[in-house]
Image 1 (cartoon, rainbow, N blue to C red):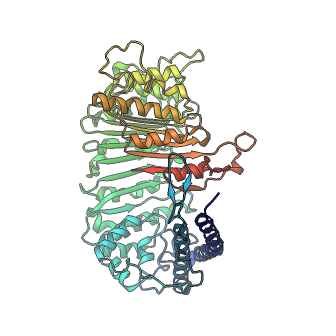
Image 2 (cartoon, helix red, strand yellow; image 1 turned 135 degrees about the horizontal axis):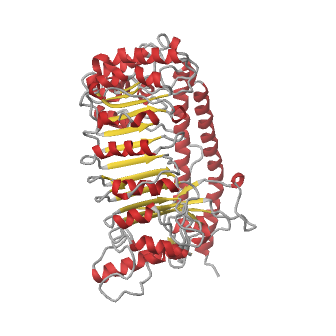
Image 3 (cartoon, one colour; image 1 turned 180 degrees about the horizontal axis):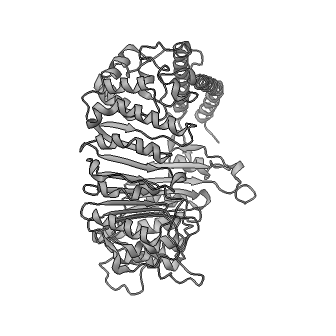
Length: 623
């Protein structure tokens, strides 16, 4: 029988839970009120000209008159901000009270992870009454330490939190006098100049950032803004007149336009940028890639280290920038195909950068089926260490392998087009498989990142055999099954040295598996355990970080998760409850992606070991 002490304690906890119920209700109401206030402010954002970097219902003709640096904030902001702040403060205090009451329930409990049960102290002494949570105490507004922080710390925080959609700098400058003084006196917060902002606003940014040599210029115009061709040219020319005297301070320059005429009008901006230029993003949108744009390379003195080119007119101006480019990205070529002549010319220009190019990213390239290239004509990129390919079709992969030699490649990232597989119908490997060929040519690979790569289990074994030095592996959306990763923990048949690991990729230290809904947690634990045991006994490498995202909760065992957490330094787990009560996969309408941030044993109580309805997404994060 239960002792009187336990019965009294249970009754007291029952009363406390009853008290917490209305508090939870009040917290929900406070948060709902805060949400309503935020929506009200969002609905009025069109009237707040100074607070948002992107203006909507305006035309280029209005830009000279739509902003005044001394403009007072509208009443909606001055009235709504204190109310919103008080509402959020009250909601925070309600949540704090709720947590305080919940913690009070745990004072005399001792959780035992081995049995998963809860034990109480069994004594004959009366249980001392616990302090109860007052539901009617006055709201004490706790002063925030944010306004009292030093100006340099505030400036750093605001610089980190700025974004492209909402101009944080302008919005924060209207909150209080101290924040306004901090923002105005911080030149680094005013370095972003955007052609889509009013001219007076950009002039103010130029004035407040004077002396800072790292201006970030966004001179890109979308073809879907509703401008005519002449209006776009006029806006680009007026933007250049604003930048002309300060072009030497440009460090990052973005020039992506909808029409070649707009890009041609922006060429003085590029020509005016000096060697201070570090990053250049230039070209046309993919929808307008039929025209070919050329310019005189001698008239462009800048030599950026990071170059991103978009659209067809970009590749034939590459000669202007090849001397210092270390990171080259060639993107947005979805609406044209390379011919044999164009392909050869393009890779000849890549060859000009062979002594300095360290990172290459190619995206959305399409190659004609009639192209036949020979390996002898390939370009050798002697310094390239990172190669990234995005949405390249299967034929293009073979063509690229024939055109590129990368003897120093350390990192390979490939985002395959959906449905690509390097195997034939009989399961054999394709002769022109770019992935297997480049891995065979680069056994020194350290990082491998594959997305949507479909392989049979025997082919995964071939892949892992060619990666003896691999340290970081990421596989996402590739329909992995239990046998796919067996080479990473099973012993090979020809292994005979007891001091050497019997599994493939024995140097692996970081493993990331994403959207692996068919994979079971015991497979991951097998990969971790064999490396942990070998590192303990022979001093070899062990897995330091394991990230599992998109796993089916029914395929994850509590024992495996606890073992992995104890064996690695960093562990992240995200699981989805993909099956409905009838056993079928939920439809998109029924999926709920509510995220729960818990850790340790509590996650399993939430994820299904202690309840009948686990959450759809649960997360463990250990570091």
